[in-house]
Length: 122
Length: 108
Image (cartoon, rainbow over all chains, first blue to last red):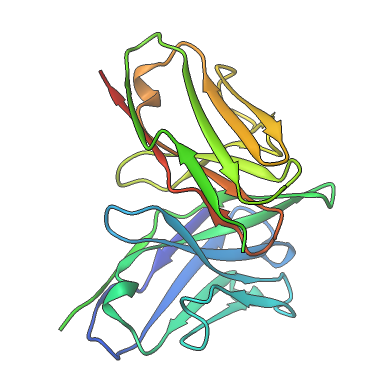
């Protein structure tokens, strides 16, 4: 079974840090690009970061650029999101999602984890 | 940046109804449009990719159409398990995906 399981969420103070992890199983993790997507309470989905399969290419949404760092360890089938300088508006459920490329033309997120909740509050 | 809008933001429907949700992009995105379903407390689930291709395992009552800037998700004969929020997503500017604000489908 193809599975993604996030962990590492919790309560952080404004200005603090958290490191999220996403454990992959059931597929060849090193062959896939990956994303982080978040959802603030009662709000919609927001893409925040992407990493290529060999981490040679990385992108961030403007809302997190300079504060968050995406990384991966293909030997451990794991994806990470280091979150620094946290703000109240970073409060959200954070999902990792597999990036699928169809025929080199179409792109979508076909496998999602169940999410981990981050709360930023004093 | 490409902006996505959806209409309506919410709708009430009955089991068996035909439901149509519209998604519009701020610029042409060809067929680089995906649809996701999300139920409360759950992860999003891919329904449609490339505007009109049904993801494996998704019931055939779901269909997508459109290209350029205007897209539609249609659910024929709404089922109880279809009450959820639906999001469109553009992948034209991949990997900088943009989601629409969502359309909540609830029970009339």
